[in-house]
Image 1 (spheres, one colour):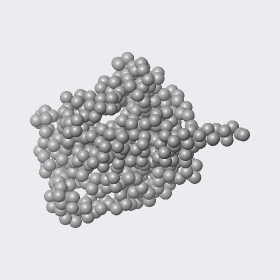
Image 2: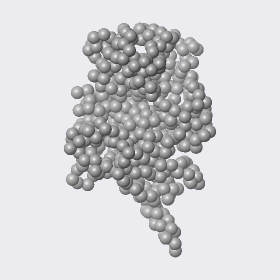
Image 3: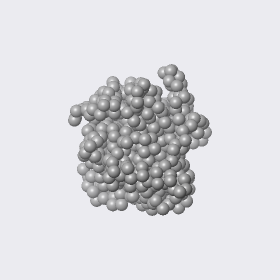
Amino acid sequence: MKKSAIAAMAVLTLLLTGCTAFGNSESTRQAVAFPEIYDQTIAWGECNDDFAISESVLIRLAELGTSVDGFACGMVTVPLDWNDADNTETIELATLHIPSTGSGAPLGTLLSNPGGPGHGGISLAYGLTVVPAFAEILENYDILGFDPRGMGRSTPLGCEAVSSITELNLANCAEEEPLAATMGTSQVARDMELLRSLMGDNELNYLGYSYGTMLGATYATLFPERLGRVVLDSAAPSDWASPTGAFDQQVALVRQTVALIEGCDTLYQVSTCPLAGEDDMLATYLALNEVPLMATDGSEVTGDSIYGYLITSLYQRAEVRSLVLETVGAALAGGQSEIDDIATAMEGGGAAVQLDGTVVRCHSFPEDPHLLELVEHIDDVGIPVMLGGPEINDETLEQFIDLTCDALPHSGDDITDSFSGSADAPILVIGITDDHATPYEGSQSLVEELGNAILLTLDGTGHGASYGNRSTCIDDYTTAFLIKGTMPPAGTVCLDD
């Protein structure tokens, strides 16, 4: 018998053994459908320039006396399309392995994802190693970071904007790049299932933030039999990409930006505040869109630029928010260096999702956008002044009736109705009461969808609660769950330090 045939039989035997343990589960079916993919071994090597650690992380690691000698990087081959076993095309995922620092055997591998969509996960894994509160996790787990398909160091999507019209960019991307058809969250969750298997773990342990919570919830829905200890921080439910989800996020962004400028002197101790409130913000926004401020390099700082710059600060700590408010105030007063600073900061679009992230989002855009339910929801919530309210009419509603994703032929092929979990593996969901990016109500909804989940609340602002040097309470509960499996009592509310 040929060696290749013997190897194939060995793989099949292994997979069939897995069938005994997990029955006709989705994880077993996926492994059986792609035996050669599951038979690979990750060729770990040095984290060279292709996987470069940022200078700030290197400096911090040196300060902590931590060696990076054990860090290993490698590329993993995955199918272009997990839904088509006859399609032999493949792509590659960039991965980073950080061994546990403890003296004993690790509890397993902890996979992480920072969100987006559109962000790579390798940088998050690097960054977590220098967070003091994460040290106990690193002692007990190997850490695995990966750049999702189409992102970062993995096989790139490779689509460029050809128009100022998003729909044309999506259509062109789908026409030119086959990967656009398989960039959805379900495909990435299947990539994660492969990574779990290749790392030799029986279960997936996972820490996901923001969009990473939708990714983790998708994994839980597809592979409930493989759930280990899963933390979903700053979470959203299954309708996150729907028009209703987009409306709720826009409202949260406005509310938290208004709260930012209204707290300028009291909360952030800024002596010269740039704006008086929502009406003033709207007037400035409209005026600068008509007559922008001009940076030294000739680029324009519009109302959209100022608003976007303020939004970026919502992801930061109080001292950064103070600096942003000071910068905006000086720019509006004519300060050229501050105008230039804002222009530079907004060159890449600030916190806006780029084309590759939009492709991912559109895969989760529901086939039925439930527009009538959206209008009912808007009637209940109201439209902020910054978004054209408070009047609700065709003119103010039109901006929220966004069917852009219909331009992507494969939109709506992800889970858009409800996530689910496992009765045997409780999930820890963390929500922040005044989160601007994933509103707190979404975390509450996700807990209901998953069924076997506990909501841990941070009473505060911002996005991302755990291991962000902000709340010892959140960090302690998260660490207790990941290491011991101990859940916080239902209804637990934490505060920032």
